Length: 386
Image 1 (tube, rainbow, N blue to C red):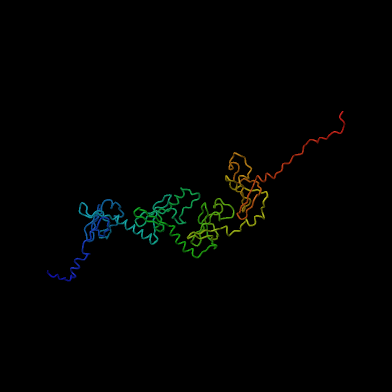
Image 2 (tube, rainbow, N blue to C red):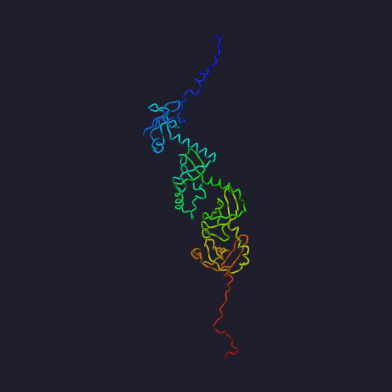
């Protein structure tokens, strides 16, 4: 049996059989790199490194703006659609490769939390359409910062849309909230960036601190106060001690405001204006007492009763069961806001800031007085009957 002698492999042979010298044949769906070697209105030829010529054509070149940016000699990436078409070329897509790159960029932005600048191109009642890195995404209304959130009194949908459309053409700084290339979904959040910045500024504040700022916006549920680059919410119940139906009746945008921090939840700040005001109910017994007859102006009529203003600071409630009204007719048809009526105070709950009023209790106290007769009294005769 012949002896087999191993011969050392020369460096030249190693180089010859090195994997880098073998042609790497791509497959459909792969992304390949190449150099543009020819451009015409109908097609772009690309020399695929280490393989053969690829071609981009048809719908790929309908975007005139994108096609005009291509130059002979440019290094590009493309996605393989077909390894060999009828002309023997590799069918390529620049657009698809761009989408893949953009999707990866968006995923990276979501993971790293990087800030992106998106251009607003359209709006609907749900939010804003935005473009970033060759991709179209969406900013829901709920993901807008307080500065851009459409705080429209009464929630008028037409005015909300008008406000949102005013942002078309502007650029907004945001973060990638969600990205799903398979579903072609890209969601941005301006609010997430705002909350992040708000948290950094909030480190020097704590519950109980008093802040001074201005009213930045008014909503049905309260007002927003801006201070030191931050913004907090004063709920309608924390604006004043008396009952409020509409915050705009008491304050206006740009009014100066002084408030106390009630709570801090993450990036959310809850404020109170009334906490810095003297509670008028502390000395309510100096002005009012159970059993007292009072006159008040009707502020609001509800199916369950009346809210009545006794003075600018103290309001009472007259339950429908304590009113003298006609049966079969709605309360709203018998009593109107602004009417002045007389009541008896039937309860005072200091700890709950409640004062109960009654018309019926007042009526019960009215005694029925008989009017004296105008005829002379009949006197019995003492004379004998004849």
